[in-house]
Length: 103
Image 1 (cartoon, rainbow, N blue to C red):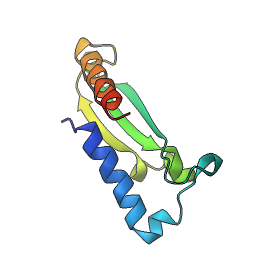
Image 2: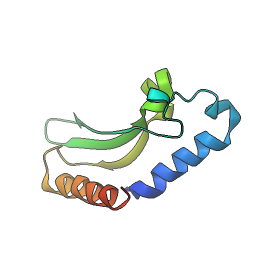
Image 3: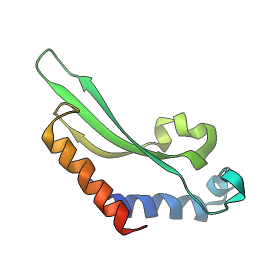
Image 4: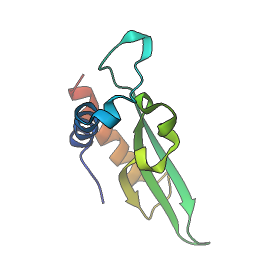
């Protein structure tokens, strides 16, 4: 399963700006209102002695202490491959290319 990064980021921002109970909890850094800081990460985990799994996620630092909650971490991909596999390198390169287009 894979999601487009830009659509997901815009959906998260829109959701947190529109809903009062979420927008009231947002944290702005250096007084930069409406400036969101996203973090992307990849976590690999062995499923068995022969199988591995990699989950790519993103979260937003503006969520404050909620950033640690699994409810505020959004999955980008979940594949049965090791973190260093060429397919995952391709996925992350694709995400970086798309992000550079939106700078």
